[in-house]
Image 1 (cartoon, rainbow, N blue to C red):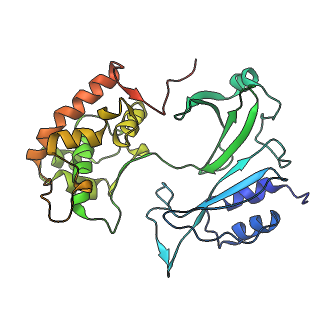
Image 2: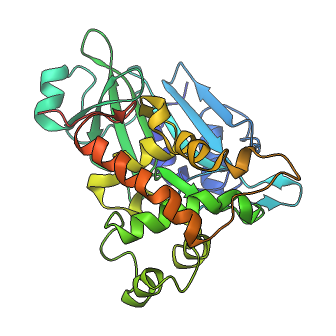
Length: 303
């Protein structure tokens, strides 16, 4: 069993390609063969439970520097994305953290949140390095059960992939344009001219998403206070579920373009159709603010 501190190797490898020397060194230190390339349906996991660590590699990371997913020849470019670290891990730990800390001790030092559909208690630790994040989950006894160290990915609300069909992003364009027109986006996200052009309807909603927003409506595009709403609404994570974008789209237009079959009439990109669904977006935000609907995974801040 290695006596080398794995933490520097892990932090060096996270966010890098699996064929990068840093990733190769990490796999060797774990006593494993090199990472394999991931696919859209499968990631690559390697680990050593005796060393208390499992490392994950994926081909689709939601960061601006890793997007879009791409191929190198016939294989998907794959990135070291995250690692689960367990109490028997003997590598160096973040400052101020210890596996023997209970809920109260962790709460006194780190930000505590209830997260996920299973309502798991997690603590956010200081970033271990630029572009990374670390979270600790506790067990039923109130003690840490594992730490997740990962690339600091964004939540995604609307994404236009390079090879996607434009008609499949029409409804995303409606929501992105509504966000821009109603103060949901960060104040500095758009130049004044871009917002003016949208207000004057000089470009279509889909054209706005694809050009002004670069095809992405992600977490860092919106004001922090609206992130949980956008995440739940656009990803069918709202309670009740029918208060989500897909169901509002189906009720307004008959179906989502993503679900229509070849040859079916598609919802067209344009301001007339935007005006049909925009009131529903406003209604959902009002319901959210009145707490009539809520997220299945993002829970209120802990005191």
